[in-house]
Image 1 (cartoon, rainbow over the protein chains, first blue to last red):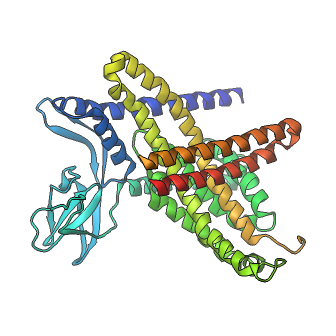
Image 2: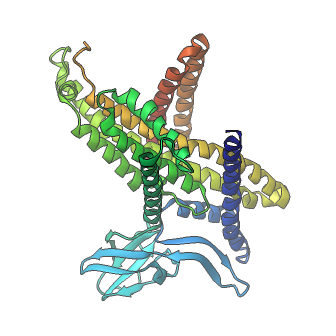
Image 3: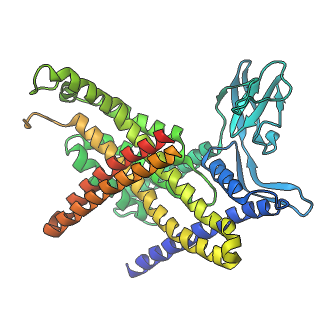
Length: 378
Length: 62
């Protein structure tokens, strides 16, 4: 027991140290490349652009980039497939054909159509356009957006984490066939599963119905938590900081509690018993707006904003070593940013768990409201 | 400029709210240490709702 405790403690510390150190390595390379760029670039603007670029989804999985001695810009990473539904049907090619260009200057020609990538979005150029042109507000005038089913960085993250969870939990489930107590890594997962079941699902949904929803709650909890932790590694995933992903999770919860709502739930929502007649329609509007819009919206925005804000803060603190280099000196700025980003990473590890917990908790609460028995109340 | 002032106001409001929640929860736990678990759960839910509101406002004001 003593040994297990020590191992877990050691692993935790090692993991946190790795997160911080590796995060440093990744960003350092990028920033040095900016500094070497003839000194004409504004560091603060470049840092801001880099952080905003990181927050977004991207079409290629680039780990870092640098400028070689010959002055050539090199990117380390691998390309991902681009899958587009255009006016002429399905078009696929690899994202390396854009050559890491993100402002629309590289035009890819495929199946008689021309494509350009602007700020991580792919545009289709109009029939006779040769280059892309912008109006004053920097909107493309001769290109339009199209349905993009590409395997982006976030999709890779989701698939990777999805298969990882499938592997972990199918092994955990298989172990119960032969023995009482799971061994190996499965022993770490078991208490977490029990925690979600006994502390989140059962008290909020009630003893009668909780079994039906535990599967969904467990899936959502581990999906969010592991992806949040993956976002702290230098792989640079920001999956749970994408509006599309959090929105989709919120819609799952919305559908589940709307579909499984019982008669009492709908009665209380549409025609509240026990209040004056004239107030009932007003209450119905408020209740419907709350259940169908505000609840999923709050789930969506909370996760997105927390994770995005966390990524921005970590990267801004790491960037201190470049922005304050002149005023504090190299050693001072690096030391300051090391200390600050180490502690903010610790907080982010906590936030990663807390956000997964809150999302699962609120989902359980909303489901519990929808399936609650009102027979003995009132 | 104005949205920065707005963001500041939102953060002030959220800060007051979180302070209230945390402070009252502390008082409650000090009075009834055996109810710590329940108080913490309720506290986290309310804090999460408040946070959702604050983030929603920041998001809309951006």
